[in-house]
Length: 181
Image (tube, rainbow, N blue to C red):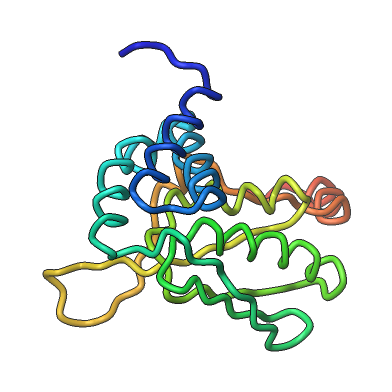
């Protein structure tokens, strides 16, 4: 496989998405997430998605020009309507909103609806972890062979990476606790 510069990949993916109906802003956001997933070794959520995303743009399955809207439910709870667009712009809105709300309210939550595929979950919780926050993410997953709704989890925690950062108080308490034998 040829070597590419990250900037070239970002530009190529964004231009490809725009040619198939994504707005400039959405194309850049989606490209950033797909390229980062590829860099992180999660190719199933990376560049391999470009073809299906362009097909879904062309067919109208995903609205490439949608702008997500935020509906506050309380000081720390939000709903975000992705308007049948890509999930990534809605997820970025959620991450920015939650990071601010959690600093004031200690805990915050958001639900996103009417969205497309959310990609690699680790990228979204990692964005919160980089701000010193704990992130948990849940997503629905279609299972055509299953007749009832179920809750699924990813058992490998994205190759061992769990986006958490314990407070200094929790770390001191853990270090001070005697080891169990």
